[in-house]
Length: 174
Length: 458
Image 1 (cartoon, rainbow over the protein chains, first blue to last red):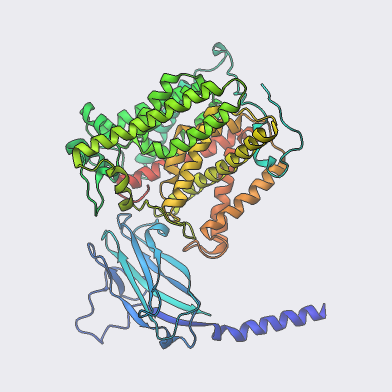
Image 2: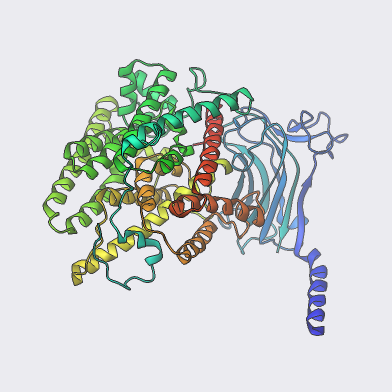
């Protein structure tokens, strides 16, 4: 019994200490940080809807692509992640959004085929006119490098109704 | 009526297939004088219409559903393509979506009727209801099961100007033709199916499998061959007619096949995890269709193995009614097509399997079998829970659902399926039937409401 308790304690301690080394935050944005820095504000920012604060990321009606976030994997992460946890809040006015994808792409600059994964928003959000939480786990290949460019954007394949996104977060895991 | 069965054989898969031990002893209906008015096939359809009307009016009045089929709400999704063919015939583009992917019977029938959108929708619904009553009568479906089946949510496509109702009616003719050994019905049914949808792709392997097993029955070789030959010729004729129409109109005889790639239908490996562009409110229906497809594949594999044993060792072979074999074969072909041509998308699976007479044939056959012991259900349950991993439910592959949420979602789907599979043995059969009946109707109206608003539900 004592050894079991000791083992459990060690495991818990191991869990506590290893957590910070195993994950990193590649992107965390509530879209409030642009205010005051840019005049005029970038067109993708919207005050029509917001899950937190005043601003959200909007893809306007009839537009195929939203603005793109991109940076090398190594900028925010001390290791090359094998798994990404993409999460955020989505506001859809109706089901007429067509196919809307929250895309994570890793541009490997010709070294290998780009990684392309997406969260199909219209598949998972079935409540309209309110903010809904979405998330997706993305497994990455082992041969990525820290210089590979991470990109995040919204793709409105059928350019349907406008959509809003807020509090986007992308975590990397070993 | 029984047939020989080698005791102890096939212990490994007997749990799935033991229902083939008996010929389908369809439950005999009581004499008509002692039955209430709704306990016949037509009466059940009328009762269903009454209940559907009551629920629809209540949900509409309460604002829970906001749209009903009307001239201004029915021009949605594939109706646009059918209407285009109705108005101006076929167009074909080698580089883009075109209406050549659609088969001619429905749009030209629509043109002949001269009806508007709502009129065609109502005519479709009438065709479906008459065909459903006739089919249930011929198959002697127990009235509660018929009521449950009529509430299948995928039947929402029977009230819109789609080809589903015509296909259903002709497929019912195919099924009853085989069951009643009416060659003319069989030929007419195949002709109608082949002209209303790309049925020949699904029907040809099913037909060959049916003929193979049918010919094995004592004294049935000649009849099976005649039916097989006429069936193949009829399907070939439908392909020829469609090719001729498209060749005359767009100059490309196989435009209907070539256009498929632009609709995402081309040979490709299924990618894990499986998904459904329609989303979580339709995925469960498509997942149940997948389940029936996988069960049909297992059953057909077992039948093929038994057939081989019969040929090699002259062992007795189960006498499965040919219409059941054909229906199973159809489910297998749809399942294999989905897995090999949609890259892991389950889109429209439920519509292609559940909204056809073949589902009723299989369901009714299962319902007519002797009771299974609990261990069979336990094994089925284990297999089903394993199957759901194709959606990544245990490995965080089911987007926006945590693993417990995904397990709960598919646990409910499993419970839903269990009611259908174990329906004949349910202690609270009446209560379970009515619960699912109402649930199905609510879902059907919800999906129709979305479809009428141009939401993705197909």
